[in-house]
Length: 80
Image 1 (cartoon, rainbow, N blue to C red):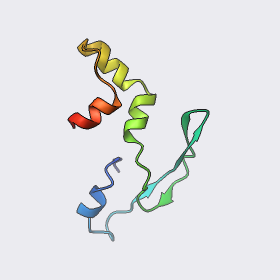
Image 2 (tube, one colour):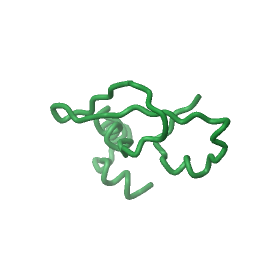
Image 3 (cartoon, rainbow, N blue to C red):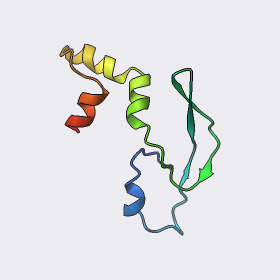
């Protein structure tokens, strides 16, 4: 079992009879993502990876660790 936010992996994995893709969905509630944790068949089309990192404070942690004062989701997405 593994988890990925890379929708493009689905195109690379074409052995559907050996791999079962599942996902759960999220909705916004009071400005934060709320996941329902109900497994659904198939690959999610929601693109939430950067949003999850931002909400969990990863960019702030990187900013404090690196001391640059310039790490945020916009900068991260441009650099990767």
